[in-house]
Structures are given as structure tokens and as C-alpha cells.
Image (tube, rainbow, N blue to C red; front, side, top):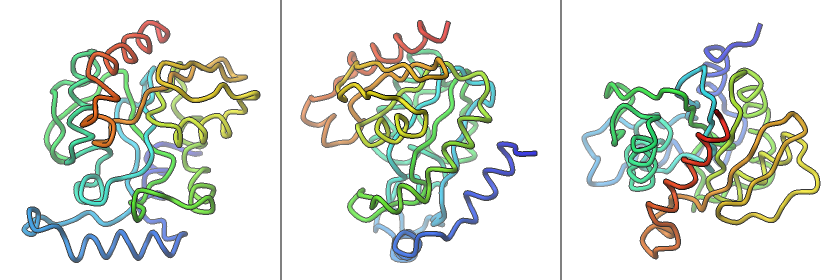
Length: 220
């Protein structure tokens, strides 16, 4: 019988995509100067959070010196700082920061995952890498039986979710756009919490807060 624990074990052991395996391990070996004393995770990163979550947050892929270093989604980088502050303000996170896998942070009612589990060069997975990883996401969503709302951070995650959950026709991606799946779930779109968006003001904290307020309202 499938379970989140068995899925996590399979994700962490995966070596299906040679380019991603080589890159994640190279980054973990060479390290960034600021983290030279850290032991990098250097493996695929599983989803994490509350198994009874009603809201699942879906990003793109681990950051090379963020989740690829810490082993937890959106942990240890600027994107994660934005996301966890927003989750804390929305009542989903016990603290406004996530710094390590064992830092004691607890998510309540929320789960965080990504369509691609290894850090890709230039943050750009190939179509083949995306498709190889997609079954993990599909199994994960099937196991998260309480989820009602999916928050898609960025167009990549949105497109994968629509494909995995059979959304046709697919509304064009945009911040605040919503789509309903044949199974009755709601996808709520947000611009990604990347520095490219947050530094330029394309995504502001009130915009992100509004997305999570909407997600909470839809999840009941």
C-alpha cells in the first residue's frame, strides 16, 4: 500500500535523470562559500508538511543552495523566506522562517512540494525531466486525501498540475487566476516567490497574503 513515507523514500533515492543527478551532486560537493561548513543534502527533495493538509503549495524545483543544501522544500534561501512568512501570517506555519530540516518548524493544514525534486541547472528542468518526475507528484496528491486547494507558485507548477489533474481547457496563468479540476479541487495561481519577482515588486507580500487568504477560504 502506498504511503507518504514510502513515497519520500523513493523520491530521496531517485537517480532517474543523469543531468540533474550530476548537477545536484556537483553543487553539493563544490558548495557556496557562505555555506562551506554545511553538509549539503545533494539528493532529491521530498514534499513535507501536514499529511492532513487542506492546502498544498506547489513550486518549481529545489534551489541549488536552498533545498538542495538543507533537504527541505523552500528552506535556506530568499524565496523560502517570503513563502514561510506568508504561511505564518496565514496561520499555516508555527514560525515565520525555515532554516533547517530539524529546526522544529511545524506546518498545520499545509503541505509543500514541487513537480521536480532535484535542483536543475539555471532553475530550468527539461521537458523530459519534468515528465520523469511527474508520477511522484501524482502519487503525492492522491495520498493527500484532505487537500482541497492547490496554490501554484509560478506557471511551471501550474502547467504540471493542470496536466496531472486533467484541467481542460486550461485558463491562462496569471496571479490570482483560479482553475477547477475534474475532481473538484481548486488551483489558485500566484507569481513565484523568486527573487526575480520579489526584488522587482512584481510580487508583493500583500499579493501573496491575498492568495493564501483565498486558499484558506476555499479550503473551508
